[in-house]
Amino acid sequence: MSQQEPPKIEFPCDDYPIKVLGTGVDDYEQLVIDIIRVHAPDFDATSMQVRDSRNGRFRSITVYIRATGPDQLQRIHTDLTAQSFVHMVM
Image (tube, rainbow, N blue to C red; front, top):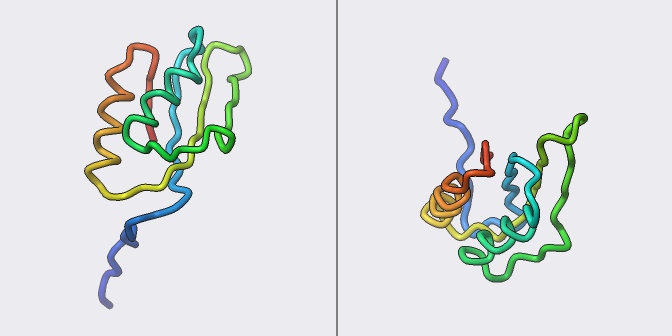
């Protein structure tokens, strides 16, 4: 029995989800939007989904971008995780 390789992402990939979990600081959504737009200028902020944790301490933001390649995704991840208010990027 041969092992199947995990599916590979084909680029460009429309509606690629990126989830950002962080502390709900002032202007959190705008800061995430600004970072995403550096790497995905055509990002549509109206597609963004925002959820607060039960106790309101954390906020989850899911954005959908047109992913152009692994380098773009790595740069987005690096820039988001460099922010003190971001705890995790998926």
